[in-house]
Image 1 (cartoon, one colour):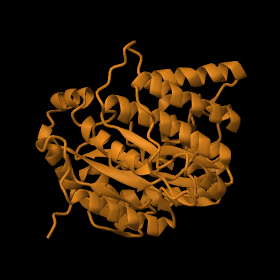
Image 2 (image 1 turned 60 degrees about the horizontal axis):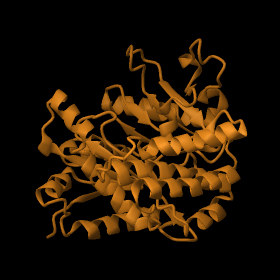
Image 3 (image 1 turned 90 degrees about the horizontal axis):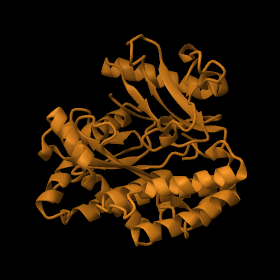
Image 4 (image 1 turned 60 degrees about the vertical axis):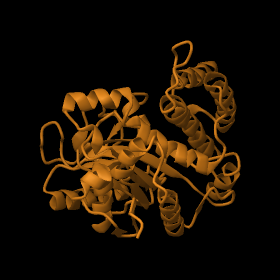
Length: 377
């Protein structure tokens, strides 16, 4: 019997449990636990830490059985979501995230919106009737993938010392300045189309390689980038400081995308079951409308408090999730109480995004919470 390298979770059932962190990483183990608890977690699968160890032992080659197991797990996501990865008419997009057995904040890599290509873009536009959202998701994929996979994972150092992410951000800032925009959300669909074309030219010129237009090439490129980030400079330095063994490896978590950037009635955020700084038993968090997860921590926009109790002098003028989307907030509040009761510990709820379909996160729209992913801090 072939060794099991892929653990599935979705539709209320999971192969793993919270006590399997050594094999599934902290994130993968808790994704499985939340799924079994009946929390609305986007379906997905975890590639085990053992694969990471084997990857480095075997000259960066995967076990023979892995490809088939990934394809089978992907097919299970497709069945649950009613979409197909790479399908031009009804495309499924996924996120690819790292997940070591112990938290390594900022050390590992993430890629969102994987599977978006020139062939799947028209299908997603037709499916959502939201062209601006699709091109916003595409420009985000171009930025993340070129940075994480094509530059960092490939070990490329640009000739002028300016990384691809910096160059793409500069191009976007130039366009915003030219148009007199304050926020990324001010960019129109035509602006985003123009930006995506410019991004591809910059990527090819800087990295001497075309951005991949095949969904499966994107997926495996992102998976490999996560494993390669385990041996990246930042991760190695962090492991030395924290005395984390090199042979622990990292897991990879692939999940159906949940979108928080479909408009002002969708959102993304991060929340804790109580105040993480003081331990006070008050639901605490931040959120942004019409955004994806990275926006909350990037400092580009000031995030809104998740509830009125969390408002400060700096955020008192911003609407809380409790005020803007009371139905969603009520659902999220119920989930966070259930989580703290189960774990008997402060719990981090990652990514509050849209009912149509983050990933490691919850999707919400004014109509209701779609999905949520949680991990311990």
